[in-house]
Image (tube, rainbow, N blue to C red):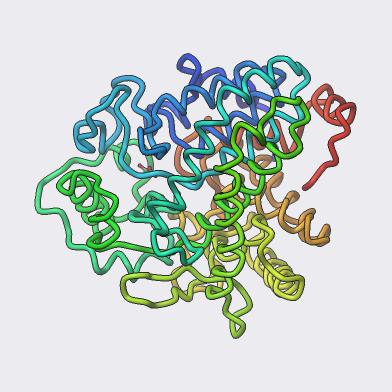
Length: 447
Ligand code: DGY
């Protein structure tokens, strides 16, 4: 079976979802611009040969950046009735309206790829110079507001901030959040099968937190002290760390001679200190007994012992030792053996594994891409290849769905989904012209 044969091409999916410089993840279910979706989708535009459009995606995301540096998880560029909670629920008074939390900042790592792999050098230099200051401020914001005690482990205030909304990791911390006391109407469950989405129990608490941020005027000190949900999320920490490394490398390599080190010297010094703190701080999240990294409930001071793909993302960050990486590589192999359309977001042997419910078991291809890069960089090419093959199998079985049942390969969630199409274009089945241009630019394939 090859679901791609009678479906839109990956490039057509991007074009379908293009609302004018920004790409919605999918029409209806997610009708605005999402932070990490936008970054991953920019890679799709690059691979489709539209470099200008790739950079435009970044610029439009940065239109939502707050004065304090935060790049929000949703930028509400237009109006739409099909999504809850919309701008009126978040209550953020700015234009364009945005949500009030962030999302895993894979943006900087993507910008490094756009810069290095873009064929139009003038465009790449001009766009990098224009967008880099905002992204540096974004990373400084994370370390300043989300790690005020300099632990080396930034925290998140909402499961949505992890992007892995209903991961079993958050069950414990979410139990400490009261339910919202107002009625609301969800839109997602009218658009996709409710058995593939989070439960009402979780939504009641998600919306409580949205209201809590508003009631506390988004004050960084108050939120750090009082937010009932404060989690050190190993995936967020890892993606931020990799992004910061990539930002610094972009400035230091400064292939274009843009004077980036001089212009951003002080910020780079601070970011390097943050990198060093995380390299040390993240080791507090390693479980030698279990052989992977854990997230931590910072309010309850409890490590969250669930085997999810989050715990393997330190490979992408490059913060695991060789011995730690090898243990995680072994774990990944048996993980894939148990759910062939993997990597299942929650380990199939977990009692909380549900193969088609959002982040409780389905596989997500942008996470697979990051895991494969991590494996490759630790010399685990066999694991990287297996992850790539499992990802290709998902698309062949179902097409460009948001995520995939990790046992059967059935497509789940939204269809004609931008980041899945982007991963196909960029990583899984790149067009010959793109592969050739990468080779000409001397780019060594990671995954
Ligand atoms: C949703 O609405 O499902 C998103 O994951 C929140 O960003």
